[in-house]
Image (cartoon, rainbow, N blue to C red):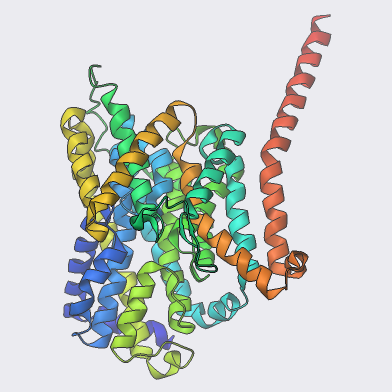
Length: 504
């Protein structure tokens, strides 16, 4: 109760409320720009943050972290280009729904789910942070490897395409993750003598290329087709029935996002992927996934925003950043003379109250801004494609260039834009590639660490209860679509036999 009192005290300060509003607005705008995100924004803010009061500076970082995570869903829904990697899964159903003329409805669902997921995630963090931190401490390389394998098992059902093509795309993504210098041996792999590839491929460049570049080329092939602009309903927000239909989805995804968020080095990307896959696997509306299912928007958005609170747990309690953004926040804390660890909970309660209060306020703020702005944002879908997509391409190129100020990165984006277009034409969805790319580095790193820890005895991984549980779930996840397909065929044959018997 003392923690909640301190949080409310932080939120009662007008200066803090102004900070929350301004930080949320900036974070929302930056999150919506493809290629940018919380990592770049917090890094740019770092010189100013370290000159602020510790509570104010770290709270501001937490605010923009939450806001940019939500902001990535805006372009994911409207132009099929995730503003942040955590919003990649939102494109699967958000963009198809916007194409049907229901952009306002899609944005409203994303805003509501993001805010509820974020608020519940922060409340859980306030009450249960010490306990969750101790549980996260039980995860070693073997457990992380098993979790990454479990994430890859989603390829059996993700995007609704061919399972074989999904696994091929996932394997290609893992291969892309191995480009660069192997930190264990110091050997360069697949760099072809290019110095710019020695540090590996940036996932954001590939994602911008595959999503934005691929969609640009796809729209270019339809440039001569007359496009019917569906104006009626574009700005219509979700109905009460929509909110009632997704509340269970939001709660499930929030639980997944909170759990995944507290695991160091995971974060919103993996949380969104797992939440989307689990919702698709168990939903009675699974046939509509990938075609504009509102559950397919609610699940990843609730999960990735719930994970923002979770990622702060290992950062604050263990001094282990839960992701790129929290790594920069951790750096700011160290510069300001703050030492993360168990003692932080007793020595600096005001700091924790400021962080959690700022994140709670940011979620409430973008709930208001998102709902009010949804009607305005949704009108982007009414802009003619001959105007919209060249602008999107310029923003995508700017986003790719801005990370390292290197034209080579823009070339990487263009290459994967063309590659993504042709792969999509032949039935290879971009989602499995992105999934393999994100999880590939984690799989390789934790596999090597496990190999060294257990002296080459990889069967020792199966002796770890948590790792064994995830591996069993992975096998079940891969086999479940095959079992469901076999059961469906058996029911169809049985129904056909009954009809034949009745005809006779």
